[in-house]
Amino acid sequence: MTIIKAMLLGVIQGLTEFLPVSSSGHLVIAQHLLPGFSQPGVAFDVTLHLATLLAVVIFFQREIRQLLSGVFTTAATDADRRQRHLLLLLIIGTIPTGIIGVAGKKIFISLFENLTVVGIMLLVTAALLLLADRVRHNEKTIFQTGWPAAAVVGVVQGLAIIPGISRSGSTIAAGMLLGVRGQDAARFSFLLSIPAILGAVVLSLPDMALVDGGSLPAYLAGGLAAFFTGLASLKMLLAVINKHQLKMFAWYCLAVGALTLICR
Figure 1: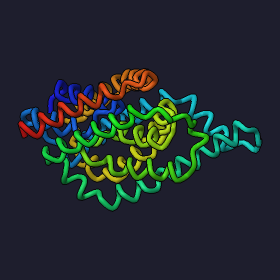
Figure 2: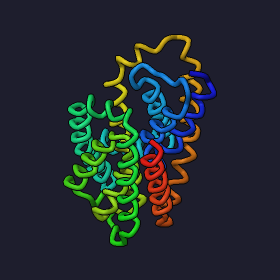
Figure 3: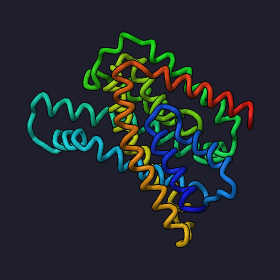
Figure 4: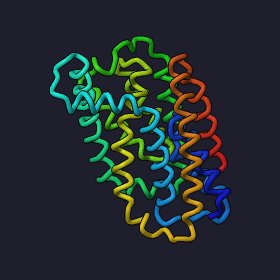
């Protein structure tokens, strides 16, 4: 794999990881279109996800510091109690994601070669985004949300391992449909992605060990491209959600999903 191809895939990952259009689906399509692309297992995909994870941590560093401060302090202020409640929600949301990821790892990996699955799941993502965009009763903050909602979002995140289902889009849509306002649903989605991506990296360590030294420059270039475009797309998505414009991404997913099914 050349550095140019790696950077192209990195840009695709950085843009589509946070925009609700399915990064995994786009990577599958792009890798099918790029002649001569190969990787050991999903090693390159994991590298790109690790880069976008770093983008999340940097973008939400203030929220992460507040969360850790609330957890490791003996104070009992309202702010500290809210942060502890958020941590509990993140733990509850992570549990079903982890169970689904571990139990279905082999099945999910096999789907990464199936363009038909990608096309259908992109249509599913489009439907979820259109439904969430029509919701206008989402007034709860994440701190007013209970554990059942966090568990549902965690299940949705686990199922989003299927290529074509947008992790960010489906979890944000789920939160909004459960009554959480868009900005809070997005922030919860991205914080919830941190343990999920770390878990995926751990599960894929055997693939990473198969990467030869000659491929490292391409992997590094792809990771840097994913990191910087990821930061930009995070800002874009939060602005779009604030303006209730998720439907623009729904129409995009609908078009790409239909084209994938037609041209597969």
